[in-house]
Each structure stands twice: as C-alpha cells, then as structure tokens.
Image (tube, rainbow, N blue to C red):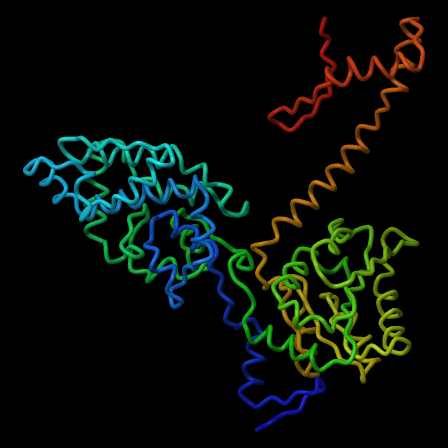
Length: 473
C-alpha cells in the first residue's frame, strides 16, 4: 500500500507506521561513541578493538588520545594494572621462585606499556619480592593523575562519577587490593573486554556499547539519574533521511526561526549534526529574535555554514510579543515574492498552525521541543501529513563551544555595564580632591605606570567581586 504526501514523496504503510511512532517519541536513537571510546582508551582496551569496525570504540579517538601525554600515561598504568590482576600468581611465582623481575616477564607484563611510561617520565618500581607493592604503586599513580584527564571529557558529565571508575577502592592498602581482586575474579566476565575498572559489576552486557548506555549506567551506579539524552545520542537515521528528502524535493528552502519559542543550542546542534552537503539547498536561516529570547542567537551565524539573517523584534508593550505576526508576514513574503516553496519552521508555538493552513501550497517541516510542544499541535501535524521532529533530540554533546562563547560574550557585556568606570574621569576627581595639578600627559603616564599594574580583581568564594587598588611604594 502506497500513500502520497504533499512533500512529493511516496510512503508505504510500514513507513507511515514507523513515522507516526517516531514522531510520538518511539524512535531509536542515533548512537554516539565519543565518551565510551575515550573511557575505553584510558582503561587500556586493546588497540585491536578500536581497529575493528564492528566494535563501538572508534579508531579516530584512539589516534587522537595516543598523542596526548596525560591520556597515554593513564592508559598504560591501567594496562599494567589489569595485566597484573590477570597474571598475579604467575608474576608472584616468577619473582619468588625464578628470581625474575617484572620487567623480565613480557609474557605476563607488557614491556611496551612500561617503556612508554618511562619515556613519559613515569618510573614504576620493578625490583620487588612480590607484586602487591607494584600494584599499590600503580593505583597511587592512577589516583594522583586521573584528574589531569578532566578536560578530555565534556563539561556536562559528572567528573566525580567518571573519575571514580579508574580508582581501585582502598587500593593503596594490601587488604583493599585483595578485596578488589576477589570481586574482579568473581565477576570478570561482566567487565568490558575483561579490563579492570571500579564498578558494581553485573550482567549489563557491554557497558561501553554506546554513550547513552554507559552514561545512564554511570549515573545509576551513583544513585543518580541522567536525563538529557540529547547529550549522548542523536536522532535516528530515519529522521535525518526524512529531513534530507524534504530539502532535496524543494526548489527553494528557508529556515524560519521563532527565537522566543526555540533553543539556540538545540538548533545549532541539529544543523551541525546534519550532512552539510545535503543542506546546500537551504538559502538562509531567518531569525526572529525578541528581547526575552536567549542572547546566544546573536552568535549562531558563527557556528553554522548557512547564511543567517538576524531580525530583532521590538515590543510595543513589554508583555506582548509581535514575533508571530512578523513571522507570518515574512513567510508569506518569501513565498509570494521570493518564490520560496519550502520552509523549515523552528518553533513549538501552536499559533503557527494558522499560518500553515493559510499557505496550503507551501511545504512545511516543523522542528519542535519536547517540553514546549503541545499534543494538539503534534496530532494536527500528523493528521495533515506534515513531518515534524524534536530539535532537542539531536546530539548536543558537541555544543560546549557555542555555550562557552555565549557565556563569555554575555559576561563581557554584563561586566562592562556593571563596572562603568572611566579612569580619566576618576583621575580628574582624585586630582580635584587632592588639589594636585597634572597635565594630560602626566595623567596618562600615571595611569599606565601605577594604576594598570596595581588594579586587582578579587573574587570571593560566594562569587562577590571587588575591584581593589593596591597601594605600593
């Protein structure tokens, strides 16, 4: 059974059912593997798994981290710890019965890892009468160095939860290492690739299968719940395929964005997770901004390759937005005057259904947000065969750059507005009060020699900022 839709494509019955399920929120996520690949590298997972295209861990992450000294150190320490756990009795026998050193047991302890650590300036004791002190030294080094790897992971992940999986509980004592070893041996088949880590081992399958699974479990192990799945997974391939098909079937396509009812970071993430070549037919993104919308819309053009037209809408009344009127008027103008036949409408506001009804010949694809869109709008879109997708379901794990930039720009603007200090004017007031005369050149020289070097900013633990002039003789 085939069904024609007004987007110029033909859907069979299975596609229709799949699309309805997808739009209702039952779609499978496009899995991400960035975090699990980084964790796997640090834990010392064998390189061959990164090179196997059927494994979740990615070779490009391995190659990148292999060049990072701090990551390389943790990896080699973890490799040696796991191998020592696997071969503890054999290493003990080799030391005590055969008089061999740990360095002299390449069949049990990888020399390459030891050599790499030595090259990176890390020396591990090898001339010991039994392996426990060696294991404790490995644990000590991992515990003291794991925080160096904090910047390898996104800011949103709980670093306390993540760093803890690398630290053996009570691993600096002989009793602690024995307890950890007993638990590890008993549950080894549950450990990913049988590599040691600190976790409540159970039959969870491969915990490094994808970012969504790993991070969800990581938070659960700490009696917490991870909720923002867009940080660890992407929309399904089917959703992306529908977007590409919609754009390809258009003559001229434009994004219409109601900034007050949309999220700039979600839109940025969505566009950046779509194939740039498939988006080439999109002529521009038109942003209808409002004073109550996020300030990050101002910098969106720096993060997407599509031309952006930015329109700031002023309010006649503070409690009344004119965005819907402006959006409707401009959309009609683009359709009737500029011959744009297809629109990607980014808004969860159900008022725009009236606009879509009044332009029956125009084509629409709607991007909404889970928490903002009404059930009535979704039901209406489905009944009228208008495809929609959740913009906040696109992978947002790589959006730290635009968020950081937005924070810094807003901070710079806010600090400047709060400070509002002119040193030339201030010096004139000081000279008047002290009844000291200076030429303009002398004032400039004094500011340069004294004030610039002695003006300090102090930030207290509670966030209070004070600007202080340190008097120095």
